[in-house]
Image (cartoon, rainbow, N blue to C red; front, side):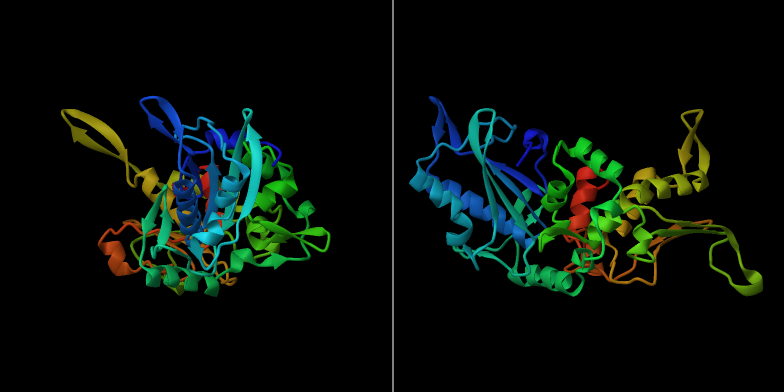
Length: 360
């Protein structure tokens, strides 16, 4: 890997975790038993593979301090094989042994897997935020079944090339994440492309996120914003559309464009508070903006005949995202305010998270 500065400032979360090979004692740092470290490695990788994939950096403390991986070769091999010996079915990972601040560390990378992976001690784990949570196997299978049915973002587009991408957006991603990688390696890092027959083939996700003309690859990947007069939609002679905009851009720009289009239509109100009038917005920005981000990130891009739609009425805003709920999310679980992690488009969600739009 060309530049590892990102490892130092990357926050732990859905797609990244640090693990130390040392424990703190009264006498100072003491190297941990390699078998315990191997179990930690297996837990993190299995949880990530059962969710959206991610990177485990072995040899770093929780605060980012580099302490390194300093085991003899035979014990180091125990760590390298942890995803095979401690997980069933065995897990495929990409492994990088690199040097950072003069100390050796090991980076394990895994993508989301179509299979449900179980630890050899019988547990099933799912990555939720920065935690590896015990999770029922049937619910993990429901998540994966949904992904297998709707993997539009991962579809490769052989006729596309790097010339179809907006390099300025990729440069901004490098700046935001600290990943100083050339374009091909940056795309491979986020699983947005793969090498085939000596050339790099782009995924639909790459073209939607960074394409110069994303509408060429998906005819309805934008947002339709419609403002109505009144509290219901009317048609024909009663048509009550006040404003309509069709917003189109790469997803990394589309969200901001949508914010700017809608913000002028959010009314300001005044209310009396402790003898003073204070202004407040009809809708809190975090609420309607997060609804838009979620609609873009989690829509079903397998539906090519409909866009994300935002309908504004006198008494409400409706944000409509094509597709069904993502397994195992149900209306009943939402009503109970259960903490559930589910991403229909894990590659798109990962990039939007690291860009700063999403909070995992």
